[in-house]
Image (cartoon, rainbow, N blue to C red; front, side):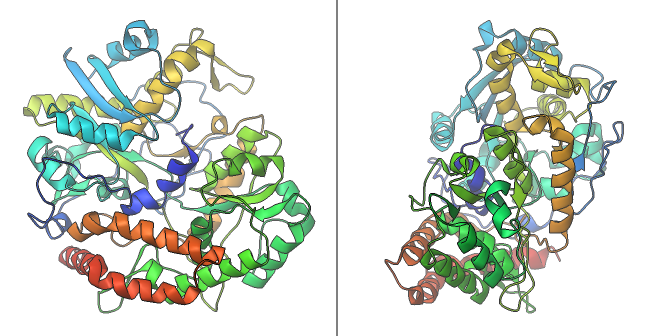
Length: 546
């Protein structure tokens, strides 16, 4: 999903995925009105039927390893035999991460997609930032679109009420083997579908995303003098950061909360929640491991290795490419590799593999695996199935004719093949296709794959192999968030404010405005303000699904 802002790119991996960006939906009732955490536990997820008509050079696996392709297929296959639509008008609310496309009336590509889908598709394109406001305004207007992209289900308050009152329950259409009627949707894993479960029902088609979470990616020219961006201990990492810092170069970007997040993986923190032996749950930021990581980041700050800028700085990626910052945090390894290539095609980003710290084994944190799902407006079974067919088309895999058309348009007009045989958009393609595809791919798309074309420059196959190798290393310690696929009303009510206050406190402690001794009391206070309730509700849901 190219073009994401830095705020959103990181947010999808952490804050939004954890439900931080809570948006109040007016007119949907109170989320405490009916308890959804217990109901969410019981649902049969769709069967997983991997797409096999195109064979990757580097195979995916059930643990989240991405499929990797080193070349573009010589012959594309069809994944959808006929247009799924019935000629009717269809509206879609989604978000784009790049410049808006030409309007439908003057956009030949948009019109071509409508012909292929067999519908008259109109799109309400939200932007970043601003999608939350667009979403709330659309809901408040009362006339919902036919298809509506919803960020991860615990990031929006009262989502259960909205779904129950306005959206189609698609469980019977996709649960178990039923999903085989929609082969491209069936290629999504159970981990993808879990984020679309609320109230024990499946509400939409997932929006797949890389399985792996936050990492430090670095400029290899900066880290060369220290032997590369790698370490076997906190002391070695600190020493290397000091070694590369000097003159107009600093080892790390000053986004302290992300630094603590990545370092916490080295200290063995749980992925958002720890499931204890008695079944109870402990939030990751209240653990001793997180406190140890915070203390280590404070030492990094005191050593002067952070760039002296705003913790919310927006140009850290560019400064890394220019060599004034050694490493920045990315939402996943492929994003780090691709972004540095974008800013300097000659640079191949190094990825820091979590090292053991504090006598604990490192835990890499898996991402949710999606950035949400697209729900369908209530309607007749015929209407709902037709719209599922549209979503099935949008989820066409790499190597299919549908995917090439969706992503690149028509050969000659919208794209040409480069020397490596990959499609590259023309000027017209950038105007017509790029923004439109961004919105369609947000709604739903095929499971993530490593493709040479995702990495700017001429080193695409090398980048695919290198990123795949990093994923193989991360799998060894990767752990999932045990609450994914479960629901807590308290989480939707309180997490946004709690997360904001915690981030502010991290910034204050690392900056020296407050003492690290204030961290534990902060969480003691929050236990009675909603954290204990979150843990109990998640635990109840998990136990019912055991």
